[in-house]
Length: 86
Image 1: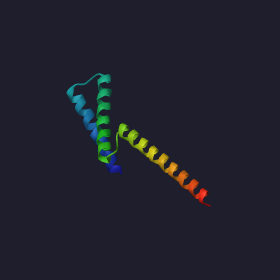
Image 2: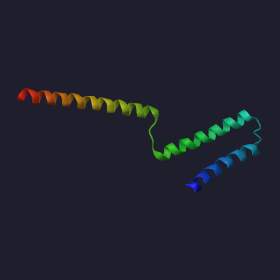
Image 3: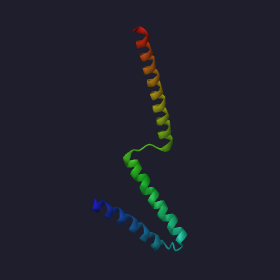
Image 4: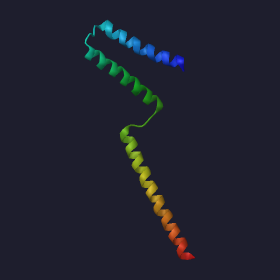
């Protein structure tokens, strides 16, 4: 775990060093470049984990809700049929 953290921090330090080499002096430029680096690293991790996007998640959650509602309706119908028979 410690080695993984060292590898990640070395990656960030190397990127910052390259920025200084390229002559980015403004703190605004530096902060935007750091954010871009971190976003790209985040996207890389998300891609490796094969997570869904926000839109896909919303669609899947709606599907699950619809299925849960159908199951509840089916359970209610089956309970009322059982009551009528007895």
